[in-house]
View 1 (cartoon, rainbow, N blue to C red):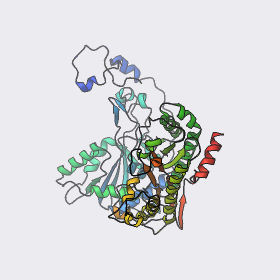
View 2: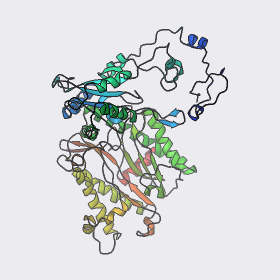
View 3: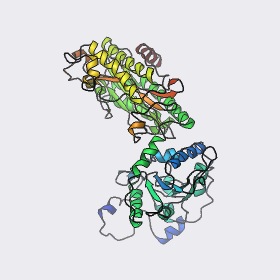
View 4: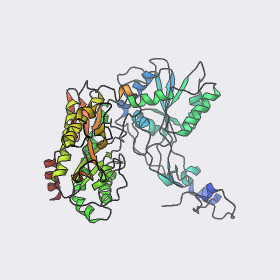
Length: 519
């Protein structure tokens, strides 16, 4: 990788701060002759050919929903900054999910950008999807393309065109998003306008960009306004307006699921290679992750490729273990597409293509629990009832196998005072899915866990059973076996749709699918 920080190769040696020394390897010239020459004799930039994004009408509706909840308040939604990976290198940029949802910008677009919804007179704001005026006018504050006679053009390794490519112009951003774009240098004055005890309130989405939060706090202090407790309500709102997906979101989720299923199909033929490698789990991980990068943006979360006893660790992402024939491998993975929507699917596969009797017994119990959850996942049902349905099956099966403590029935275990069955499944059965793998997480309890299912909601159903290798509460034949089955589910008007149904679930179907893929 190229060095990133300019140092005058002709300058005399001088003491440098530790911060300067952290990036003191470059030898770019800084002479006036160099500056004059590198900023001259450039042709016209090629037109980026920017057109309105497909999300424009949808993001207008999303912003309208947010506007309706906060009339009179200035709403600040940062994309977030670049994040340092090590020393002077950054991670690939991913905007905050609330920003992506409200602007339609995905992949690595617009670090440091800030979406601001400025309050206006009722009904005089930006039109919603039906053409009615909202309570706000949206402006995107961005860092636009710098001219080629600026130092940023050739010297700025984070933002310069020479280093990271041409940024869009303000007009490009406006065209792409349907939102007025202005230079980020105007942000401070724009946020401070009319702020005061009797004036405009400023609310900011916290957790996205610390520097923007600090700026908002400073503006409040200058205006004599106390810290805004309503920031939390804005964070809640940006989650809650995502609980029911619109048509474009569903399209992107279907795409993510389809790409994820393709990734699983690529893993199966790679299992013999995984068995042969000293870190076979890495073979599985890299097979899936390479597909995710080729066919999407990346993975939606760190891939869990857990073979044997590692499958009993719920979030095993070290993925450095061996893969053995006769054992199971739990693959929990999802492709994040360019719009940043992700799938989240788990299958537990027999490494050599066939389940043993014990593996099949445990797998079938988990499948039956999942099917019970599917049966209640319909409009009018509470979200928490999905988990309850799965747990009834898990508790009953553990009682049948004699694994619950003496004198404890499934009914007793299912009581609030019991819960002994949860020793072997400590996680929940479902979570919402979308831009985040655990989407809408900041929504209020009464709208999430205690919420009622509506058409357009998307979530996972993922029961499991996990018997650790040193678990003396279970027979030896169960020890070291972990099974999870996870599908992505859309609530429809009269029930639900398993978006990931194309990936086999029943043990006999899994075996036939694996045999076909292995030829």
